[in-house]
Image 1 (cartoon, rainbow, N blue to C red):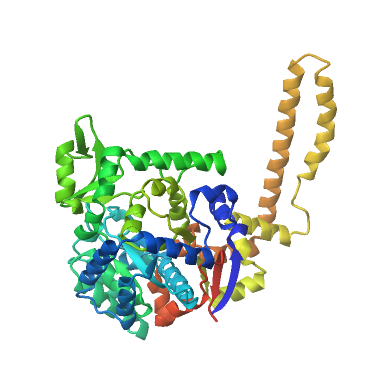
Image 2: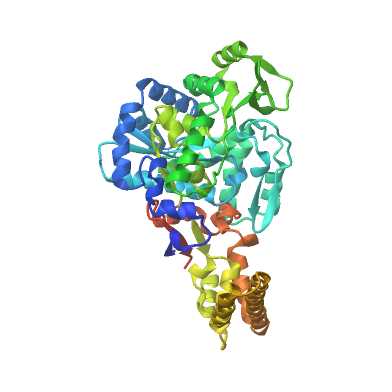
Length: 535
């Protein structure tokens, strides 16, 4: 594959917060442990190893070995399990929901990012072992987000009802994958490989957690990736004191609000949080349900339920059944960092945005906030499309700044006349400057008339410029249509390819070579968007 890379900070598709984070804006220093670099990652490793207890490490290894008990593992997985049991073993982590057939492409990109970064750190031979670990969001209950995937433009949907943690869903009647095999997959080598993957994972599992564990292991076991399902009683026993604080002192809400205020003071006064904390940021799991825990005058109750607890009953419940307590989006990061010897979290832009709200909360809990790294993003371009782009002189920068931007720039480039009428405003300025000078010398009603006329004239120029652009668009219709076709092919429904298209679409074309190609070309610390052209 041919690789092109574009700096994130030159693209309009990313928020100012994310671009400022990539540019290491000083206003964000109070919200992080350190900006990402090989040096900072090596440094935080020593701090994390001092903090992480042998008890927590032993618990972690015991749980992982139990979860891998019936899983066929590679030598590299066995090796990393062994490294993780040592006192110098640290992790690089990402996590995701249990998306059907891995869901959108970025599910895969996240995992490749942590594997690549772990390899780079291990190559530095610092004396520590860096182990990539995938955190399965098995307790999430948003079934709508994970029940479908796209293949060759068609949406494959799992018809099922769910109210509780998606990881516990039975997959005995996963008819959509049976139809997928029959109707979408042929007899090619790659098709047969996909069929085998499905049969050995989804059709051999009882729950969605088991199936997701299986498919991720199938794809990445040879790279030594470890997978963890956090919906574990033993792991949650470690969280009892932290969950107790959340229930009875609501530290998360208090500290996250402090961090939001800090971001507004030190970074941007107009900063808007990605996630607003609740009074209590925990759920309670019952069979088929995952309900928010709400505080009452007498104790607690569950949302959308008649179940209530006194304070004494809730303390007893937490000690006896910690597995019933489930963290929400703001407590989950703390859970992860308590049970893992973790130094870095690699996530999408939305994830990094809410992690930036957590520094004060982590400090309050005496847990080190990991170094936050934005996952690799990529655009996969066929040789056919790249040739069309070259013929039409379309740049990747223009493509990645949106359809309207692309079309507008292309029309301006092809037009023999200037489409910029803003110079007319400059001419109007001198005329209205004269009128504004005489405002103070006459009745005040004249001032309003001048302002209204100025606004009207300026708006008129803007409207004429838009109409001129539309006129040229009609004149250059054939060229515009070809440009739009390229954009729509690479950005389905106007969104980034990685947010809609599925990994197995590309596996069908490239087979098991696809993952190594991504691995070779991704650079987790490069702060650049990657374009990969097939040759």
